[in-house]
Image (cartoon, rainbow, N blue to C red; front, side, top):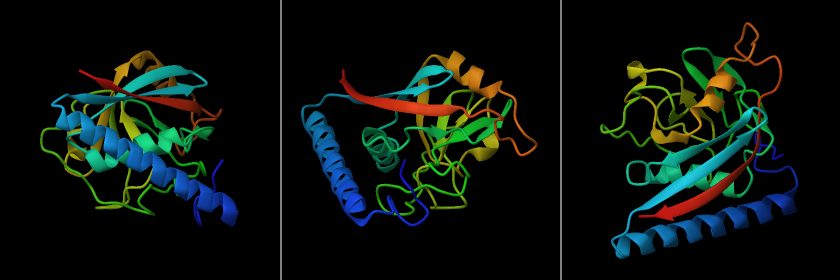
Amino acid sequence: MFTLCKGYSDDEEEETNLINTISEKKKSLEEKISYYKLKGKVERGHITIYTNLGEFEIELYWYHSPKTCLNFYTLCEIGYYDNSIFHRVIPDYIIQGGDPTGTGKGGKSIYGEYFEDEINKELKHTGAGILSMSNNGPNTNSSQFFITLCPLPHLDGKHTIFARVSKNMTCIENIASVQTTATNKPIFDVKILRTSTAVKVD
């Protein structure tokens, strides 16, 4: 698991290798997206997230939130979220994860510490299964994200929406039903075991 309070890793060589890998993955994905656009095709980024309570699939909103989608997709490709936990679960509201430290205070993007919001008026928190970036205010996106459990219109314009759950909302419901502490942390770890990525073309 990567340590993100200071950087991607405490080991200088490991960090250099990881940064190079991120750069290569990012470039490859950007080239792939550009190719499909040139051919007039529509590409859809899909990610399967495997947890200890089941698996679910998400579809990325490439054209609405390109920078955010590239960040999330690349982090999944390098295994950044592997063995991280959903550290915050609030029934009938959200489940939150994406922080490898498990504290809600960590996380890093492929662009550095933070990157700017991509607020799109076409995307709203209209119901359950919307993926949106967690933040500490405007333009403080990193790796943390949340998944809605109900309509949350008061979050529109404040958080970048970048994907939706496209398969198996039952898994999300299972995560949302776990027992939690007074601070909304699951009593037993709900882990992202691994992720797999794919670009599908229409």
